Image (cartoon, rainbow, N blue to C red):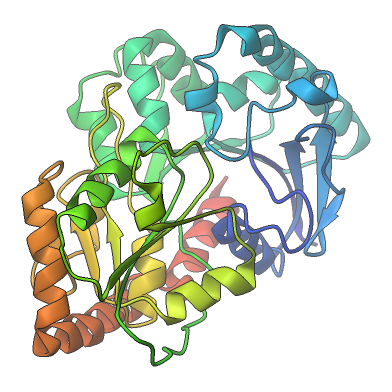
Length: 377
């Protein structure tokens, strides 16, 4: 009989075909071959199907429809800065806790999996059911400011998963865990996109592509500044992502906002380089890994990333991509032109990047690790 898992997360597609967190959909779909998994995720403005891609989803209503905007798009960490949303954050936790209690009475779960345990672990009432917490860098950045909350999470967790070696090191090297009362098991398991290599299409010009949320730590403004310094009519910049982008020269590049899966595939197929110019933001948060780079490299698209967070776990300088200093607009401009003007380099990065992902970032490894964790608790 399959183990029953309640999977709590802040974001899950609102309907089949929604491109939100495609890597999680792929992960859960693969794990459902071995486990009976149900999702608990919030509504967005009253919306959200109860079955997505064949996966059962319990929807949490926590506010009047216009105020159900804490999650999706730019994400909770940036939205919670708005004092208007603070009361709804409280109801999010309280009504979430009530919802979890109802679900635990309805069905006997063997495991509770908490994606983004800060704040979602506070939705879980006292229970003997093993809790697995999945950490990302942003949660640890916040936890560093309130270590007593972080220690509560770690003491409540049976097993802790980190999304990258960098994230794991952020916890243990940062000396922010001060009240741990018991030992917990832990491991690093990467998040992988739904890797379906995209066939490249012949096209005119040289296309730069950015895919990601429009938030400070993604560093998209540095990419725009670098692009504007490239005085070459054959170079185009496409930006895909949710969030507010306010730039005085938006008519000089293509801002697509949220796109369909087919449109994103088209943009990838015509991209000559994918750039992730991530930075360490004002809160100390940065990129835990860089899933978009995995997506690009698996399709043989050369990539440029910055030397922050978990990005160096993907990019071996001048072998699987180009790695540059964060916030360095000139270095970013030169890296783009280097790939544009050197076909030999472009082909080498394409081949070696693809091989690196195939060997080190594949679903067989990820699923094997998750099975080990789920079967051990």
